[in-house]
Length: 346
Ligand code: 13P
Image (cartoon, rainbow, N blue to C red; front, side, top):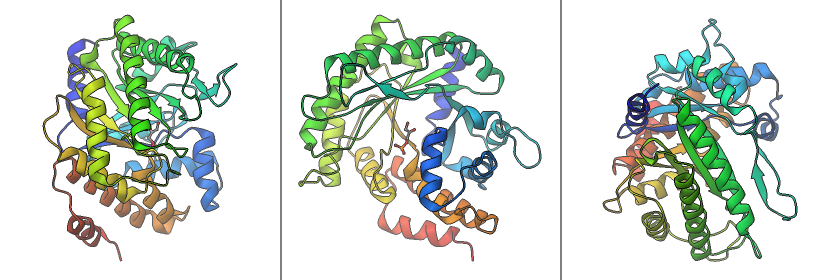
């Protein structure tokens, strides 16, 4: 695949008013989400749940791409069609999480490094044959006393850069995701400082590894105070800190920045996305690549019951629409209520 094909994937992923559905929870993570609701973590339940998400009527109105987990890209919908083709029929581009999760960084208590480079070149070729057009690799950066260390930032940046270079070699658009975690009582300012440092370290490594910035997407968190910080920030402060941080650290050659939700309540994530998207001119397209903030409502609604599939799909369509409106600066409290009423199934 040529650079032109990767560019057209990017244009399609950044289609105005559309974002990415992150449905790439690893086996332990989806097990945790199912476990919280008492849903047995079987392969069939995971398949049925992902089929529910991907067959949501008109999901392609607001969702341009979906990130799959390895198991899912090999699974089929009820009628026998591969789930990646089900997505493609909805006009949604299939992507794939290719990292192998995180492991404790030896010698650095409380820090983790992402694994999964071994055999990645061959896996990327196989994923392309299975229909994937983009990839994702997530690194996690914790904020704490003396954290993050330079060693953690650099080890993760190096792996992200190798992942991105290998993806581009295979003709797949890499989504480069250094996630600064919300855990802790740090301030908004501290999150901005760490996010900025993490991004600068990542872009230095991308540059060194000759990654073409024009054909990556950056996936990052919003700049937020820690979950336990006594002084929380309003959406205006979040938007301001997030954009200041990104303007200072992300080169304008990057075509798009997609936000993760990171454990924020779903409506709050939409409100903050809306505030960010209303805050003036930026050199990149902005979008979302939410996991929990898109899936919390449909997963709770479904709760493992075939009778609830349509209601769960309505809940997903509603959240996707609200986030799509936020990208266009058209989200409001009224839109939140109206689209819910319009899509509600009896
Ligand atoms: P959340 O939106 O739930 O943070 O998930 C996004 C994601 O893909 C994390 O890698």
